[in-house]
Image (cartoon, rainbow, N blue to C red; front, side, top):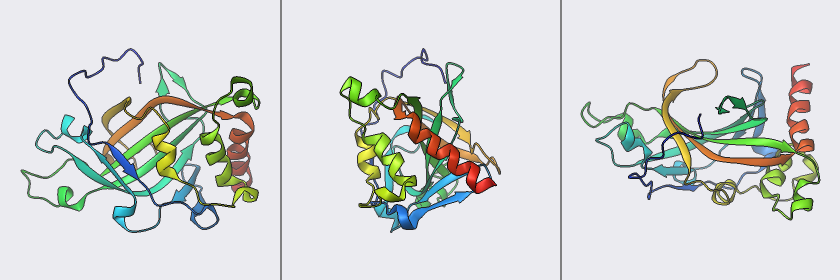
Length: 214
């Protein structure tokens, strides 16, 4: 992905919104060795885990907007996407299924997409980065709580995780899954803002992967 890519000035995703049921890390996390993915399973009814977007209209011009229902979130280290040719330290994908009304519609109204992914990119910073710069470390604490059993005092708010970002600036494209079976028909939305996390938090993801693979 290129930072100098032309911005679509005449397109505004005014319908974009997310709503996810709070996550209990003690019950909803697992490790999937295929693709080396640490996963968080999104539980609840479809309407409790939903992303709405008009970016589908850029590719399926006959569809103005779409609802996508969250299935799971997983992580890749290093990132699967690069920015100006440079990989980031970590990437999170929230995987959604397209509204069945769009995937099962008649051929003239049907979408080409089966799933959609909302992507987030992270870079590791020194452990005192947030304190030294007076910055909020919400996203770092969110990721840290997924792996650290000592932080399981409350449920995690993925909705707030998204809303605290500059989510209106995103790369969007028609693509495929980044791991096997590399299925096509994926509507990608990757948030441009790179999220800082402590090096110690990244190390936990990397160490957890080593332990699970041994």
